[in-house]
Amino acid sequence: MSWKEAAEPVLSRMPVVERPAGHVPFKRKLTWTAGILIVYFFLTNINPFGLAAGQGTDFFGQFRSVLAGESGSLLQVGIGPIVTASIVLQLLGGANLLGLDTDDPRDQVLYQGLQKLLVIIVTALTAAPMVFTGEFLPADPAVGQALGIGTFGVEALIFAQVFVGGILILFMDEIVSKWGVGSGVGLFIIAAVSQQIVGGFFSFSALGASGFFADWYTIIFGNFQGSLSPFTADGLQTLLFGQGNILALFTTVFIFGIVVYAESVRVEIPLSHARVKGARGRFPVKLIYASVLPMILVRALQANVQFLGQILSSQWAGMPAWLGEYSEQGQPISGLFYYLNPIQSREQWMWFLGEIPASVEPWMIGVRLIIDLTFMVVGGAIFAIFWVETTGMGPEATAKQIQGSGMQIPGFRRNPQVVEKVMERYIPQVTVIGGALVGLLAVMANLLGTIGQVSGTGLLLAVSITYKLYEEIAEEQLMEMHPMMRQMFGNE
Image (cartoon, rainbow, N blue to C red):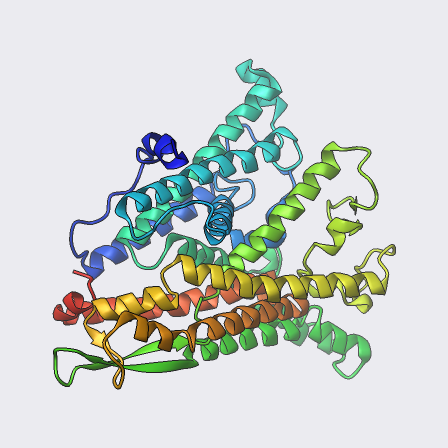
């Protein structure tokens, strides 16, 4: 008996959001999308019952804009389990170990069921150490006393709430993908990054940390009238890296502009309809063909490595120094986990800002930077290839789609193999170049810093996903205006 036959009774019965029977009107899609977004914000502002106030640490803080969610909320794990499960399935699928044919409806059901089962398992494995180690989501002993269940009982209660939150975000993603616009994962990343950027611009000291505009109000009407001058070394450093935050503003605007430009760079392959004379079109092969979503997989892999280091450090008193030594803030300052920890801000490599631990040598930062850059560039290219092949964007799948829509490439025979060979001239090369470019941009943005302390990867993701969401909304509106186009592109 094969594993598919053994697992089919379980995988085929996994809960699933039903697909719409026909075309979903654009306004209804927007309603579903807005509704899920409201639920997402609502869940990120609810703390698990029994959580000790203000005592836990947010390990995912440096990856929070990529993994969405909110520390100390029901969505503590964010989209991390979904991304981790996708990594596992992509690696297994890429090595052809699953034996599943995604063109077969039965295997599609098994694949989706396997993905859900993996997400459930990873959610439990992620939430358990966060709760039961007491490092990230500490239980309030007073609640345990009041309920008569003890500290362990409160921890179990917190675990159940965080676990349910992780399952909810899985089905929220599925609802958006089937009934809304775009994908839930992309929507949640946009929401998380937007919160940080808006806060970075408009927050005021009366409400907590001051933002960009509040800082410049203080500079113009306060410091420059006093001792601070832009013509001194201290004044220039304050404007660029400190209170003025000019470098972060430049990086934010630059990344925004370069991603929008890169999204518009494309090779357009001409198409013509085989039966409708005069009907022509173009198939665009964008520079960032695989989108920036593979970057989530790369950063999630790094986050899981650092999560393992955090757990080992807190639970293994005799952990060897070569594995890593940690500061009081829970960050690695030496050892293997230090070199594998991506640089997330300029304070982690600019010595003159005075925030680098004394035990960290310049060569250590150099090695760490080289490893991070290699991991992001090479990992971005590899995961981009996996992404293209597993999402039906490769040359073979694209050729079948073009053939199925009744289109052909002028000057070539109407044959899937012929179209596939034409696509192989562009798609693999562009996929690798685009994946490596996105990785390079993400590292650069992290090195220079951004407004709201958004990670470079998070900013890249938010801009690219927003751009694609805009394109999808424009396409949906076009379909609404011209219903015949839905039949041509198979969206009826």
